[in-house]
Length: 434
Image 1: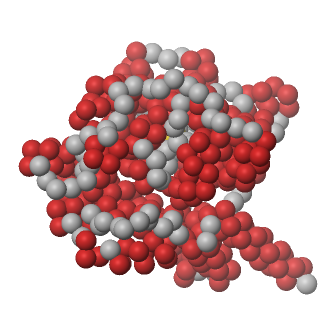
Image 2 (image 1 turned 30 degrees about the vertical axis):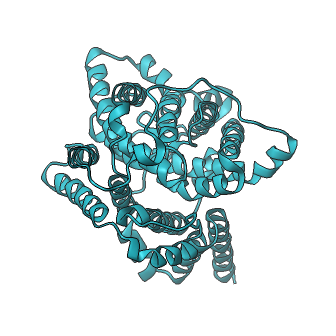
Image 3 (image 1 turned 60 degrees about the vertical axis):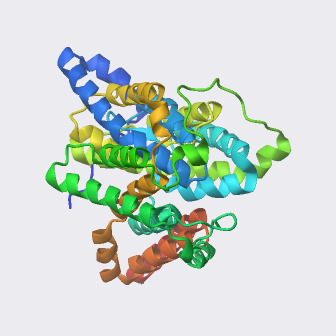
């Protein structure tokens, strides 16, 4: 496979300023016409249709309300596109953050998550201003593959409860092994109707993807499940029964409670949000470069991600990053500029304002089916098998990253994987020099 194009790495004061220039500014400088605007409108609408159920599903899986996911996609997504260094990047809540968010909420509450997101955004801005975009992209490939595969496994495990409609006597454990044990004990409470809904959603998504990939399979599947649930009064848990529905607009911005002790307590989580957000967003930007032949500006992208995270925290939303699947959808839908991503957020806001009452009827099993498909697509099975069959050192880095991320902690997994990759690299250099 050909190497993806590298981000711009200019030198000199003028080039340094350009490295932080939003792609939106460059777009209008290069000329923007009515035909490009039409393409952006279509792409923005297409991505919004995909992002609507996905944002709610990711929020619920993270232990937050579905509204928190929509706030993140609307506020954060708009700013990522407006200020970012990638012409086609779509920002919003991401599956990779589910484990981290759930852990922060469990330890510090939702206000703690908002404070950590606010601080993480500030860290991302500093990273962009100090030109750390080029450093983050040097994370070894086996670490990225192992981390992503582990996150996919964790996401799927987090959806088993709603996929099967299980009833747990207490709070669902966050760690994967205790979680699986609790779910196994709850096996007798399985809800056959929930199983049928989740299986039907997965079947519709995969079936429409095979028949016509351009059709919005996620939204069609969730809409059909909501219609069936409401019309037939199916005995399944819905957004309405668990969360009371979603609001029909954005809340007023507010600063989360903070103090020195509180900030010190969430500081490690803020760094985790910044590091994970930086890696995920730049990885998504590189994928977009490979699909379009363009080059992203890594430093501008980090600054945009930082501003977006600070803003979404003020509106009560989840942390955001660049999202590979939605960015790829944006490109395939014919997007011409960052305006497509900004319009995707506008369309999401319109959907929320007009269709909030309808969202109450969406079964949680349907959203679990959506995330099951997302988890399946996240894991690059071909790349995993290639690394397992290839060089022994890369295999060890992959397995260590995967195991520690899935069983211990995602930041420990990344750190240990990078450390092992560095040690093995130094040993190889010493052997060659001997």
